[in-house]
Image 1 (tube, rainbow, N blue to C red):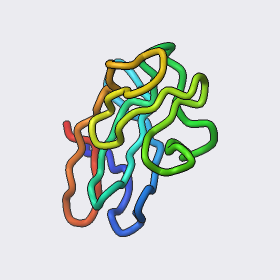
Image 2: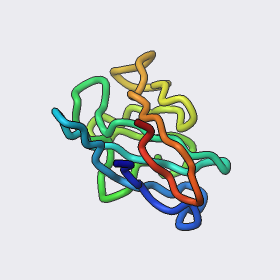
Image 3: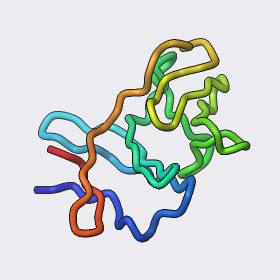
Image 4: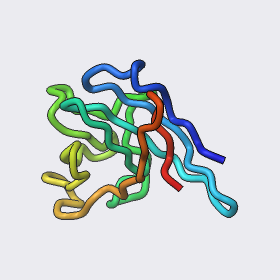
Length: 110
């Protein structure tokens, strides 16, 4: 069964959507972002401590909208790559989630 995240027409620039990746054995918090007309999805877990990145529901971007920001210690991540450019986990990456766009909706790729 495909796991739908959202419809593409519900996304605006810098949109974020939280979702849970479900498999037979585990559930992982995740999020999808829409930036520069592209969608990216990552596990919602900081490489430094494992805490969720967002400081409020569906709030992952830094105030200037240029980076994803960890709410705990302010680490900054490139939206397109998940690469940490500043903070205690500098040089590490967020774990990406493969997604597919099918018939105007985004799904977790199996």
